[in-house]
Length: 282
Image (cartoon, rainbow, N blue to C red; front, top):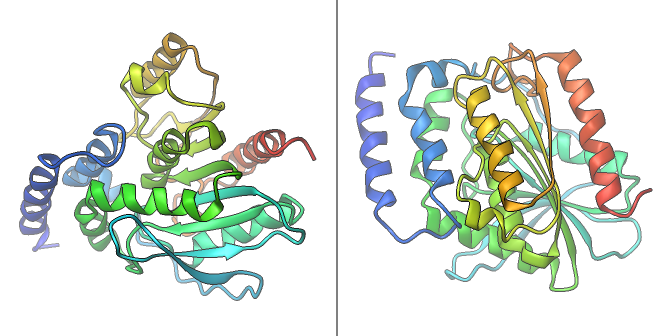
């Protein structure tokens, strides 16, 4: 913890550096969320994840191309019957760890194995096991590279694909940006306590509805930010359903000691129903 002030300074410098580059996503929402790691209260809201080793056998590691020439990675659960339906899963700020693989498998099974579920690695095979390293990884991920990975995942699904996205924390905001990048292929986004898009003109380009799941005790994405998101989506003429819980940031992460099982179970019921409807109702 003695190194925290030094790390914070470095993180601020990193954000300042890539904030001046041309954005790869639609807005600065990704950068805005990354700067939250400069705040001690936000970092402290993320307890170090409890140990867990994924033991499933259904998913497989994959590599896919990106426009910047550097291959990207993911963990794929392939549908039992060939389909162009894809669910892109976006990690928390820790990276594509075993908890994300487990959650992706749960989504795959609960969707009846009828949808390809791809957990996208946004950190190029780097995974943090504590909040300090997670902060560094999140802040060190350039918008250009994040955009290249998202576009690469969308291209991997293919032009005919119908694509939904889901994510938590850092990945919640990424899921929404992914939905924007997917254009007409996007059929829906589920974002758990991620940074909303604030540019109404960008939101006007969004295809498909959004389910936003937030905690009223969240100091990083507080209720007033959610209120603004609802207003902006209404102005843009888009469909947004918001579920709010008396919980803190990260409440749906089972590796977090503040995990709220009751709120998580209810939120997941809504998320699964939303996704089933998006994929045609099954």
